[in-house]
Amino acid sequence: MSESVVDLMFPRWEEDPTPIFKILRAHLASDDKQKLGAEKFLSREEARAKVNSYLKNRSKLFLFKKWRFGALLKLATKYVSLRENFRFHIPHALFRMRLLFLRQGQILKEHGYLEEENEVFFLYPEEIEKALTQDLSQKYASEMIEKRRADYERSKKTKPARHLYVKGNRVRKEYDQIDMEAEMLEGVPASGGLARGRARVIHDISQADRVRKGEILVTRATDPSWTPLFSLAKGLVVDIGSTLSHGAIIARELGIPAVMGVRFGTDVIKNGEEVIVDGTSGKVYLKQT
Image (cartoon, rainbow, N blue to C red; front, side, top):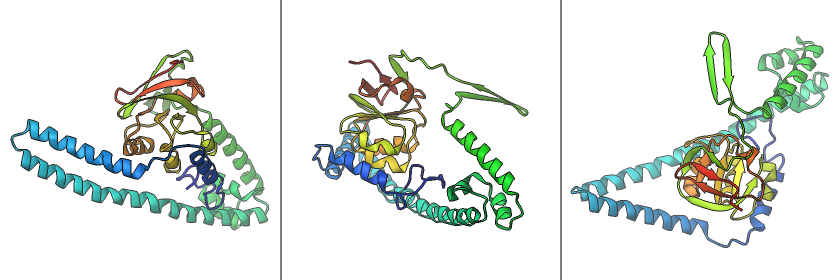
């Protein structure tokens, strides 16, 4: 795990365990003593009973549909683990790829191409190959690293366009205007339910220790490294994403309301502000204090 599972540039938790300790501190600061696993088991059984009750009251083919539902649920439960196994093994493979690139970066640093071995991630593989055989000028490598680092820092601060219009080689971007006085934000309903609480706006996993039990977690995007935080959150609001995004899936698994793709949540919502998350309609109500 790391700040970004798929981006090789970010150190993994094995290299820097600081995020783990921050997440642990957040959990230790909570006075919650509930047994989440037992609660989720009971909620699953309740959901199964509701489906069976619905089928019994509305279908003449109740026994057949009950059997069919049970069979499909069993298959889904069995094979969804394949997806989780994939998500488990991919970070391990990516970590080994990162170590290979870092070793190349170490060699290039020794040859004077890099100031820090981590700069290797700003070079293309073919450029790395040429640099390793010293067929690439150090000046060119330095210029490309400086340019791409600047592009990277600029891109981190750029809001994604709402629409892209492409005609030939021309691309026109259309952006939404941010209404800082908005009293309601709308996005994609990703996990049903209603939650009210104080907003906790964080921008990356390094701020994990700021989250407290019962807060509404507001962030730009999430990936698997955020999962331990979700059990603390009462609701979830994410700028980027939809129903199959990581945050949406985990929110449904944990039964917390979630709205994805609100675009400006981290800009408009303030830390400590009382908000209402309606995960069924996809709306977030602000200024509730």
